[in-house]
Image (cartoon, rainbow, N blue to C red):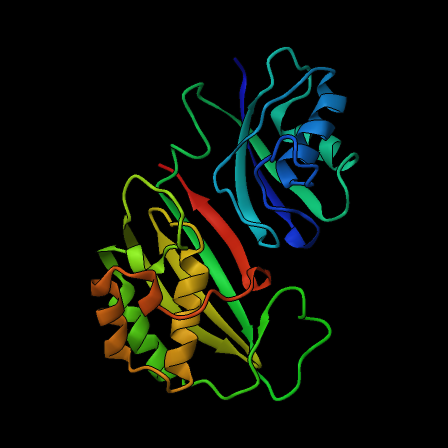
Length: 248
């Protein structure tokens, strides 16, 4: 086996998530990648992704791995060759050969997501696909105070989409930060793993704090309740971006 680790970026607007959905006819990032790798390698290539981003979610640093046994192309040149086949909304950034036991998903130690909110009186046509529009003023100080309650190792059952399955809802959130740059408010979450829709629900809850609908202390109560109904709304997928994945 010749195991290749590759970092890719994509605009998720036109895709039904990263993971292939066989038999549905829904276009995914994985499907497009594998079709282009088939043309490059002359054989079927199975891609493993670090994060199964949802429909409409973007990525700046998604990590994949695949077997390139029998290829003559040096690892460093694979992105150049692949980008000649990929559509404009998916880009291979760089690649390297890694040990056979490397697995993009199971070898990951941490992932970082960023949720972007366009916070201004009028919406922006340029940010409509990459942010959630919120015209009301947000109090970032109270949002940051609320975010601190999310940091650490907790049961995040309240921040999991109803009906989603997971062996455990306990996760460690290393960082939950709130920042602003002009009209853009950034909510950054770095953790050892995330439940289905967890980041978008945390973002929705923090926005409620920023609007004065909740106090920062109530976020701690939401965590302890372990009930999805206690948390805020699930914000739209378009504001979410996978920034990067960390490995040892």
